[in-house]
Length: 112
Length: 115
Image 1 (cartoon, rainbow over the protein chains, first blue to last red):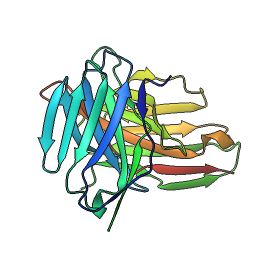
Image 2 (cartoon, rainbow over the protein chains, first blue to last red):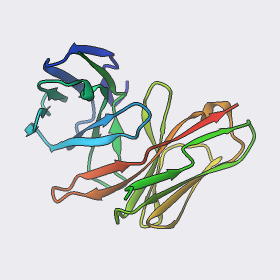
Image 3 (tube, rainbow over the protein chains, first blue to last red):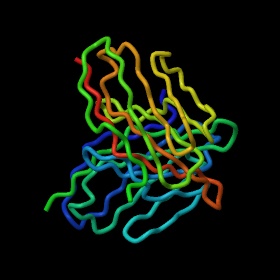
């Protein structure tokens, strides 16, 4: 079983829809939770990060963490065609040689 | 003004060859990484260096040898290339946020195809 599980999609939604992207994880030591967006043939870019449980909002994006369920979500409001990309969740714990562990990514397609 | 740059962008080579990929960051970060992304988009860490010192080596064949001449550069040399090495290789660098998280910034990737 992978440490971080993410539905690969593809997820296709019409423009303007609310998108929900999710990851589950098994390692309770993870403390920091991040979402990266990766356009085709580009490197991942950091969208948001949160520490521990709770919500964080940034424009049309909201990141949610539920540590008790080991479940994180990224919501995109008023989705746009320019949001079409692969979204990767990533998790990190402090400690020696700490590292980011990524999910496999969910491919999102926002259609006109 | 590129933050993390990699060369080359594309690399097509024969099995058995030796090749290098270079990475440079101008963000002033102390930590740099190499990741491999396979055809299913899974991004897996290979190595991490902090201030030129190796801190993560993730069960990578010893045909892969990273080198960090200074903290702004991290190169990856691959000996005796195999078909299974075909992937996209990403370099990244990171800084620690005031809250303690390591936020990583990725380069554009090097697409390696071994024939």
